[in-house]
Amino acid sequence: MTKFDLSAYLVLGEENTLGRPVEKIVKEAIEGGVTFVQLRSKVSSAKALIEQCGKISKVLKEFKSKTEKEVAFVVDDRLDVILAARDLGYKVDGIHVGQTDIPVSICRKLLGPDSIVGLSAPTQDLISYVQNIDISPISYFGAGPLHPTETKKDCGLNIDGTIITQTLDEIDKLGKVSPLPVVVGGGVKLADIPDLAKTAIAGWFVVSAIAGAKNPKQATEELVQAWNANRK
Image (cartoon, rainbow, N blue to C red; front, side, top):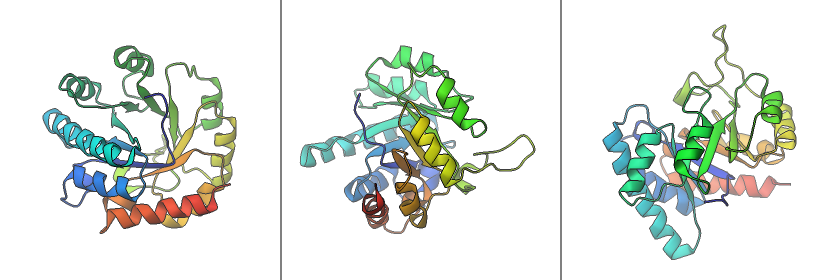
């Protein structure tokens, strides 16, 4: 999948859905306007993640058949899960990795040229990093956090134990200088979207704002509407 839309990006795993099935949240979210889905869980077994890949890919296939809209689907970190899911015939478009995960060059080699390979950029020296790294294996950058977040407590963690967050000015500059599209998250809520929409980034990502919402479809619609209404 060489073309994808980062503007409304949902990250979730079973620990984020308040006990509801992951695929149910995905279905409601894409009906509300989510354009990109990442399955990320630190508690699910490999078997459970593979099964969730199957259920999510089925939801996305049904959505595409009804609307002709394609939503990108990646899995966080678990290259083994992606390869197994694909072997079973499930459509998983790629992977998202962090700085300490499997190197992007290996991901690209094993997943192929048409796969999506997302990389979380480091919180420190962010601007310099995206300008100097070899981008050839990478499809997009993830950046943040905008705020400290309970869903990933080490996001933005400095060596002294403090959390480094990104200002809107830094985010705007990042979007302008990055050679690849950038999606920003980390504690993002509805109130943040109008200001983020005025920066040069490609989109926002959230966990709790959708997966933890009482009505995920409505929550997504509100986020997407706020983004579109304030987009330059």
